[in-house]
Length: 279
Image 1 (tube, rainbow, N blue to C red):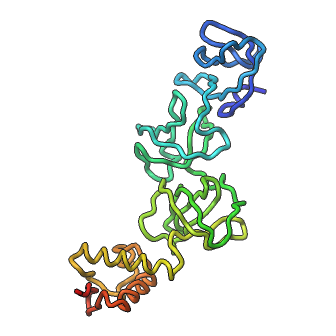
Image 2 (cartoon, rainbow, N blue to C red):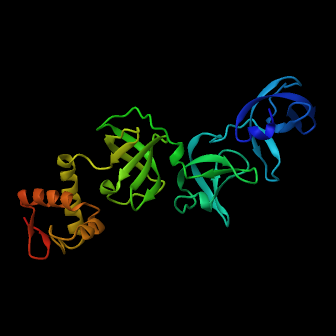
Image 3 (cartoon, helix red, strand yellow):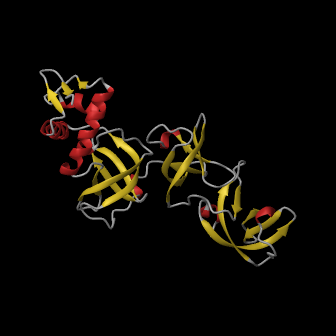
């Protein structure tokens, strides 16, 4: 076992030598330092120690008994600690922050954001994070149609919709036709499974079934009208793009909600507007 091949992994290594500043782990031919402050009490040469291998600020291979927030081959949600000229730096529980290069970001991130990432070794042999996790997500989700699920948005596409990692590990998509409202990378979402595809990937909706969503949409429209002085300056005949931009609704959802409000005699429709009826 070459220690450099174990970068980013947790491994059980043997103490081969004790020194004033810690212990060396591995073999006589190849070894790595575990700093003194992390050496288990009473540890002696020949004892096994479980450690994580990474590179310190001087790019030297080093061991730690700390458990990082992510290891090679895993997916995890980490917090952006800071940003700099080469990318963002993530908090992963180790002294040296984890770099998320600009080219590995699916959307620009800022301090405090939470992002789903995986770990990889770059061309310089350093551990880095990437938000490009599509190919790592599982397709054996235990969910079925109409199940409620939770996940995090890790990418968006103008053509396809919003990509979600359900339970931070299962591949899912909110199709473009269902992607209403403000949905951004890093957002946590609650959704409903509308389809389990043949390849195991999930199609989601962040909206209830139409007959349930109608009341929520109607109430939202009423609130918007109140904010705008009691009226909307367009009707249910408006272009779908205008309705989506102003209310985050599809035209069909808007027409259903307006129909409900008309039936309840809470609004009236004029030639160019929708107005709240005074009681």
